[in-house]
Length: 173
Image (cartoon, rainbow, N blue to C red):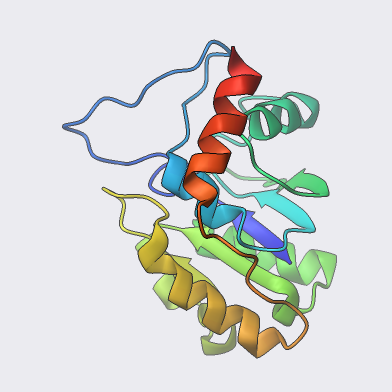
């Protein structure tokens, strides 16, 4: 699957009353549950759609994401000509530009403007709760999307939080 990935409200909570921990590399520590759920998706490519996408180079992003335990084969980021575009417009543009098959796409985001996507693309969105981030409650939506694709299956997530926590801790120590 090609996964459009937002960070705030997905891999980290977006609760303004709660501090987000910063790792030694200067970027956020991801939520254990978000890592586990993300790793249940067979990810061929991460497409960074986050507002942080231009904060680091792709090489730096790859190191950051792998150090946090995310599993994927390829990494890219939406190259936007304008920072004024909405997330919805950026994703629609990227899909048209790259000629991706919509059935190969999952969008992980908390941006409510994605409700304005055309229905067949909106059906590919896992709209997370900003205050919680990606969690086990989102697995049923992910499974539904994978079922529509007919070529992908949800990877086993039992005990994944503990495994991914151990992986993450061993790689940042």
